Image (tube, rainbow, N blue to C red; front, side, top):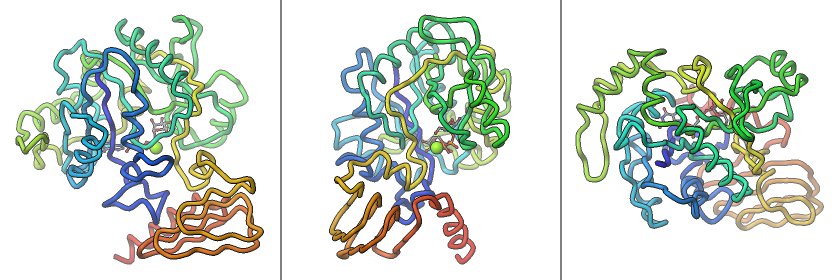
Length: 347
Ligand code: GDD
Ligand code: MG
């Protein structure tokens, strides 16, 4: 099995810590290791793993190479995208780079947290077996809220051990639909991790978006060797249709299976999610750096350079970095994107 690390996101919802040039996956947000390193370290102990393939923006190539080196991993390839075209082309590049069409790829977003490693490993082992039977395997999280930022997977009646055939895959439904799915009890959230044979994925992509596959093949064939990097041809890749694996393939395929995953998964999509997964003191505060508190509860407080002092508040996010200070109510952290939009406009 070949781990494929997808690292194209800019993580704007964790501004001001996560930046375009230094997005969240390269930061040690939850442990001493960065999220990308955690993504690989989480696989420790799984048998039969081949060296990983990483797919990232070319601006991040040295961070990627260095962070892999720090944990003693030599990737089979670091594929560099001159522009982001979303996850379907990124996965296609990895599939086209695999040694054999029968290699099973384990697709891993670079910025998630999985608290329970043994449960995760059990699910991955089952996923590999199903992938060998030409299924496109998703890892389903039991849905607990009508979250509209996720894909929803309806389980079918056919069983494969603990897994189900997928009846329907719906990427990012509206709130009403998400609520209906939640009430039905028949849907999982899509975790964004997948397992399938390289050839299986490519055949499905060929069916649903031949143009994308054609451009990916061309951009890879014209790639320039550059140290250990595979630098995709910029002009060709720029013409690639942009789409996520979820819309481009998973919503359309009839070969999907879902394995329930109950392993403390979190995609750390916001400051409140980061507070959720971070170790807290007895008053519920998650503290990073030089911080003093008085009568403060259930808050996330990050100091980058200065002493940060917080008095008499609850449920606050305070983040101090080199060039910015953000203070937000914990239940308003989705609006960080409005600040990022304002900043982009001001540029
Ligand atoms: N290499 C590369 N290139 N990676 C990318 C690109 C790209 O152009 N775009 C996104 N990625 C990486 C991100 O860094 C992240 O690790 C992963 O692919 C998923 O992309 P997101 O942008 O975070 O997707 P999402 O959160 O909107 O939705 C996906 O994840 C949800 C769970 O977190 C979908 O798979 C949903 O169905 C799923 O529920
Ligand atoms: Mg995401």
